[in-house]
Amino acid sequence: MLLAATLAAQLLAAACEYPDKDSKVLVAQPPNLSESFLKKEKPKGETLVNVGLDSQGKVVTTKIAKSSGNATVDQAALEAARASTYAPATRNCADVPGNYLFRVQVSPEP
Image (cartoon, rainbow, N blue to C red; front, side, top):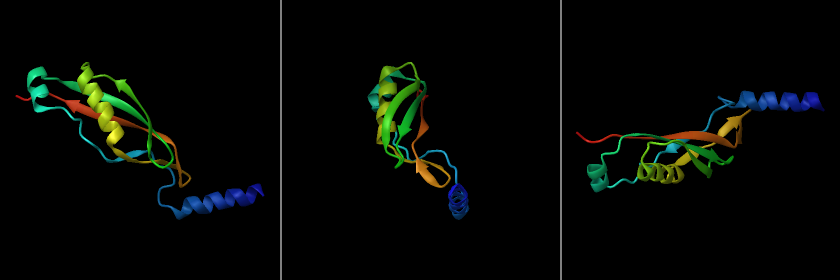
């Protein structure tokens, strides 16, 4: 029975082009930062958001992995990460829960 299960898994893996893939963003939403905020505050830096995904690619958790140092930018990054759409990770051609590191970079306009 174990041999049959192993053979079935190998056939399934051979049937898909890439049996193991990491989660990826399909449509990244931009952070909602107003022009007046950007002109007044002139924020700069990078926010990284760790996005936990279920096996369908739906967002189940978000957490700041690296702060930009500006709470407004970080909050906008969290909201953008939640509003984005993702593809789940795959292992042996099956969709599985995974994580994606969502990145928001802001810099002041010259």
